[in-house]
Amino acid sequence: MVNKSQDEQARNDRNDKPIFQGEQVYLIAPDPEQDAGLFAKWMQDSEYVRLMDTDPARLLSIDKYKEWLEKDLVEEQKNDEIFFLISTLHEYRKIGLIGLNGIRWVHGDAWVGIGLGERDYWGKGYGTDAMLVLQRYAFEELNLHRLSLTVFDYNQRAVRSYEKAGFIVEGRARQYLNREGQRYDMIFMSILREEWGKR
Image (tube, rainbow, N blue to C red; front, side, top):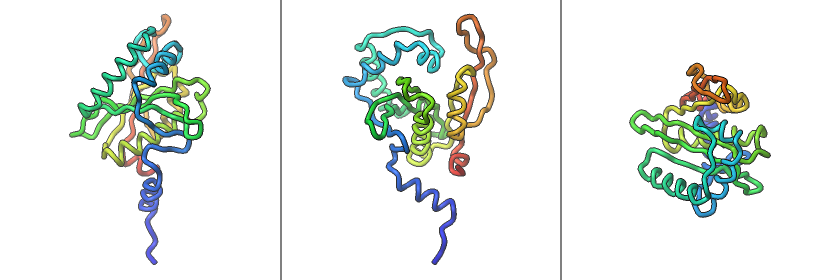
């Protein structure tokens, strides 16, 4: 009997899992009608907003988020963006969002965005698990070569999560961001398919 190599075994182990499911979460398609209220709620948390985006925090109505989600789904059809909600595996609770944007199919490159809107799930491995699921989808299903992301240096919890998921710091834009009169760096991180395959 021929023994399988470790690489073959690892591939087979990954292929046995549902493509959108991890250990703690699964990824689902957003529903603008049902999910606009979640986005409006999450965006009222100014800390969440400041961890997610460089733009100043602002409040929008549920109708505006519904419109944004509907527009986002149209953008997906242009084939350069893929967007999911993160749901807990056992409670079926929607806790955040994750996606790929700026996909350049010729080069096999995409940017990753993630945010957990439900604070009760921060720091418990849900974001890392969602990132691992997205990586599997990006590298195995979409055949991408590289995933990139940015994170602010005051968000060390996210930096640790990305490092657990295999992302490597590539550099930083110094004093990129102004928050309450202080300047913060923006950190650039990435993971390549071969690095992911060795994990």
